[in-house]
Amino acid sequence: MAFLKYYLFAILAFFPLDMIWLGWLARPFYQKQMGHWMAEKTDWPTAIVFYFLFLSGLVYFVVLPSIQSTGTQVLLRGAFFGLITYGTYELTNRAVLANWPYALVVVDILWGVVLCALVSWVSWYFGR
Image (cartoon, rainbow, N blue to C red; front, side, top):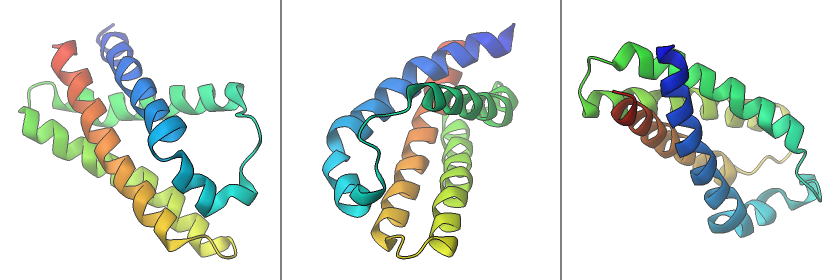
């Protein structure tokens, strides 16, 4: 039951932050970097599956083991999770896709670090 409580707070934090980032703040950057790869419309069923899976990992591997930790420790663990997950995606793309932009690799990894740190902390803080 604890998992669901933390998971709910993770959803409430992650989704709006990522939508603001992807849909508004960084949209022009992403369009410039990978516009020719972008679909005209978001495939929401696939995106929702991603969000549920990704946030399950964040809660399971970061938030639940951090229940007795300090806020700083949770932020650092969340940041590390973001570095590993977003880094895996971006560095794999850079390694196997022709002309995957370095700027996209750096910006997206940094976003993952910030996003996962914040979402981990919010989930931990409000879940306690």
